[in-house]
Length: 211
Ligand code: G6P
Ligand code: MG
Image (cartoon, rainbow, N blue to C red; front, side, top):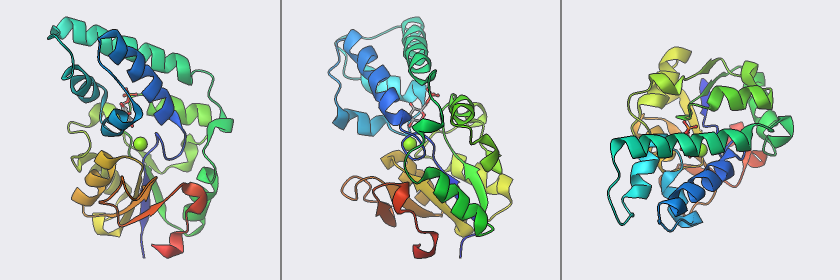
């Protein structure tokens, strides 16, 4: 019943969510802010500057624009170091099969990640050519939970939002999919992704015919 499937990248197709976590944790602790997995849930799907602001809201002092810029850069350099050795071995179980199943069913495939490193990660994973359209995060004005990124993907794929299935591991991402008027398939825990239409633990449980 769908005409396109639009995937998030980090935490859905590959476990870069963990690398983002490690990089933010080091940055947060250097600013004297306690950082744990629970706080990290709020950052998933949120862009770099937005994430930094959320972290620094818990700091004892204010930081100048220049300091923030340097902190965002430091986090990104650490993150790029962590992803530099990634390969196809870092694809999450079921990711390639899910992409192949969507392709075999004749549906269009999009990628909607707010990460400015998404193209690099896709190259490392060797799956860039499996997508009909990859949103360039640098051109997106409003990050998730705003619907812009999913709506942009649908438009560029030439498919109405109501005919799209969005796949997300983040609370903000599921909210973005729902705000775009799409069916939201959550990847993770139903207790966390309460707004999703359906939740599966991982793409190895992806069954297109079930949604
Ligand atoms: C994704 C991740 C976030 C990350 C954001 C920006 O949405 O889920 O954890 O902060 O991308 O990534 P970037 O690579 O541009 O810093
Ligand atoms: Mg994600």
